[in-house]
Length: 178
Image (cartoon, rainbow, N blue to C red; front, side, top):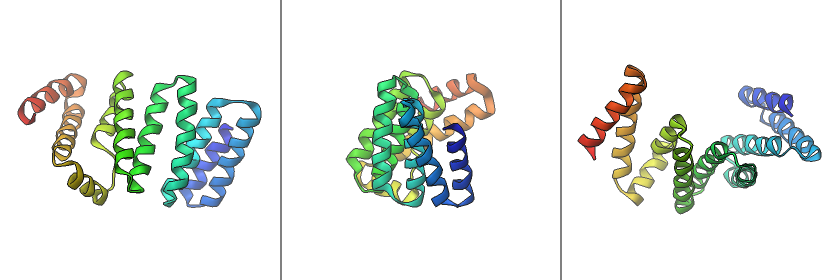
């Protein structure tokens, strides 16, 4: 499964999406036949990502939902949060804003629970397309923009000053900008 998924990644990066999909589907079939839930979920997530990159968001959403259930069953909260975050982006692309918001909030809560700072920052800032981001701002207001700007500044401060600087800078920015 590992080699097939890696070949899928390689072909996806090279733009051979049909070949990548065949490798991911082969890995999924092997994982399911072997009863390997971790590779089953990983292959589902890879298929979801490939389809999302191609713009097939409804199909990607289905794969992500199945992968989230497996991550939950296995008790892997970091993986569950990462997949929920991807699911939220797929929902956003489909125009299902309540679903996107719900999945992103769930992902953020999980990342906070496991203290995964890097993914927490990504979930907080939102990895969304600028046009979609503007639609969300119109729907949910400007505080999201200010929060993302503040969190981006915290990340920059952290890169300049290391972990201690990030916490100190983050506290200063939160006091300044609410």
